[in-house]
Image 1 (spheres, rainbow over the protein chains, first blue to last red):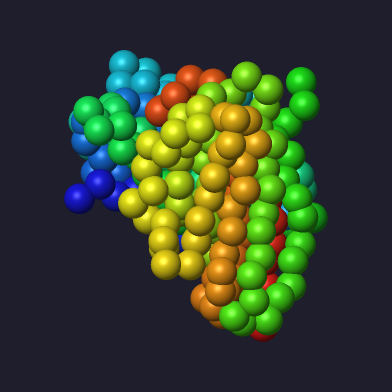
Image 2 (image 1 turned 90 degrees about the vertical axis):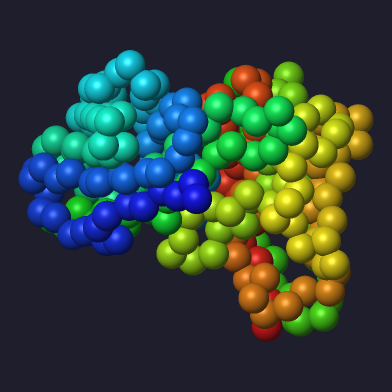
Length: 116
Length: 114
């Protein structure tokens, strides 16, 4: 069964500290993995995309890693800011099926709160 | 480039009433998605359109939910009649790349069913 699990469910950190969010998946055949940031009351916005051959990708203070063998990804946030407070959602794509049915699998997200 | 537009932003109705949501995707995006996001959970796909055709509606509760995308541009999602458990944020997203491509989300419509 295709599933995406994220941990922790929620996290509170002090401003300026680093943190790492985890995503484990069982989606197959794997196509790509995206991390989205969702601010309260807003729609998700893509942070990074990783394909099978990539194991690290950075976007400013955000660094995503992918281990396709163990089917794990992480999102590391460096020097956190108050504006990083949001939900971070891991989305894994499988290669499209012949029927064209949905091939996107969403995690439930990690709720990050950065406090002064 | 204008983003995905949705309206209304908020809606409060009583159970058994009807409600409709509207979405205008990014110009030129052929693929349009409707998601339901219950508080504390990730988005759940309700329906996916490719132009004006339905690609996947396997998780759409068809006894009460309906959606259309006439002319392959904007789309409406309707709930009739609403139940308490329909309280959620309804997100619309569009993509130019088809399945697996980056999705651009609208701000969502927060529905409260009393």
